[in-house]
Image (cartoon, rainbow, N blue to C red):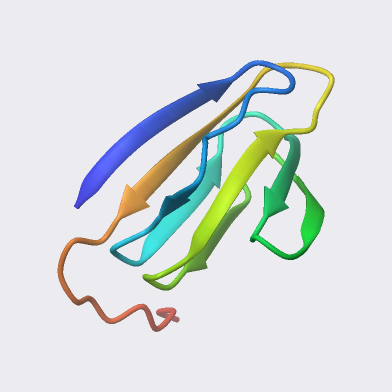
Length: 87
């Protein structure tokens, strides 16, 4: 795994990138991510502690669309794992 903390001021962007591995994002601060996939732009409001997963191959640019700084943890799974929820 590779675990990275990201901190973004209002309006900050990741820049266009592609994810080579499946990944999990966990919000440390509630906020809105504005995701541009090359065609569509979608605002995604997320609560503190909320997480989501994405498969490898995702290409996008992500912006902090919140009026305040946000932070999240990105956990990239660098080899195959069973992502089936337990319980």
